[in-house]
Length: 124
Image 1 (cartoon, rainbow, N blue to C red):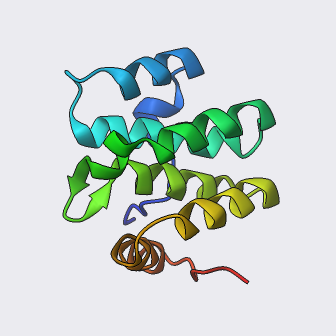
Image 2 (cartoon, rainbow, N blue to C red; image 1 turned 90 degrees about the horizontal axis):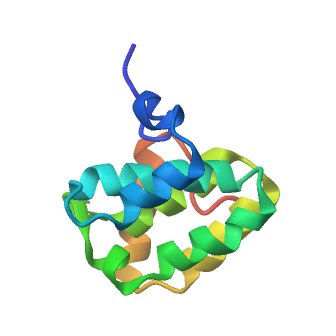
């Protein structure tokens, strides 16, 4: 079975929130691993309102918007994808606001990322 970008990362799924925070802030980690950790935090923030603002700050961070994981995908975009994957209305609304703050090319890249994951973006 083919893996989807929005599927949980089995390795990171077993870590607690503090361990994920450490991964996201450690420059010695690969950019992709940092992005997947922010994505997992975004997924968890969907069910944890107290985590939503922290994840939004991570996504808004200029460093995370500039760090590219694969191709044009940034750490911030993976974090936003995590909010979408979490599935709550609150997290989806936050994801839409965050994407609205990006430049057109970032928005376009994120829309492509969502479509290639089987998600219609922007969601109605």
